Image 1: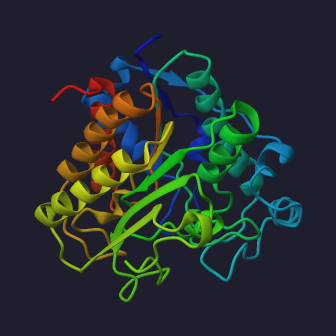
Image 2: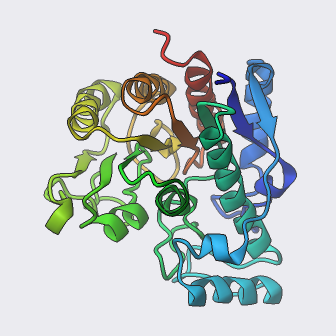
Length: 318
């Protein structure tokens, strides 16, 4: 088993960005890459290119009508893919398919024993629902990974862990009653922030009751509050014993993000990543995939994601 971290960075992934001053612009990957190169993290990971996912692969999570609509809007090159936050641009379907394809390539390599961990800075599109885009997210790459683990690899008990400032509603609600999807999400309280969901009372329904953990944080919460909340995440994962971990490491929870109000430092993201490597080694044969998620202050996302990547490279080292 090789220990290298696979890092997915290329031009196609960088093109997943919206024009005309949109908060999720096409410069986000370059901001991360400049810092990763400065820290020489690119030398300690295996840099991989993405591939385009097929419509059938995207369709493991998404409905056919949604996939077709994105294709049509991409060809037209304008319009809104959702209620207004996520604009179409020429090639948005191709860019989105590469985000999913990068995730599936990383998953295949982990399952083939080529690596224990992958990091996909342009990924973690956790607002996209099965039938629609939402919140800058066209296709839900994490959802495709979860459904592929089940359909193709026979792994059902998956943990989804999310520290993006926004609640991962596109993962919570499709699996709300799922008896095998272990969910843990630390986010800014939905009373103050999009998408307005993720109350601590949302703990799953039916067969999924008790498997879901939502921890809303008050505006202004710092690393100290995060570390206390994080202890609950570790307890939750150990209690329910996943076979695979999917980690969404949105950097918009770091102080200074223009769209949110939490006050973490990049140390929170590095701590979460390092501890998840420990848990993955204990519970999942080391298998974990990390996704960049949100983040709209370029310096923050560069430092936050590099903290995650460095922790993945170091593995379970203290």
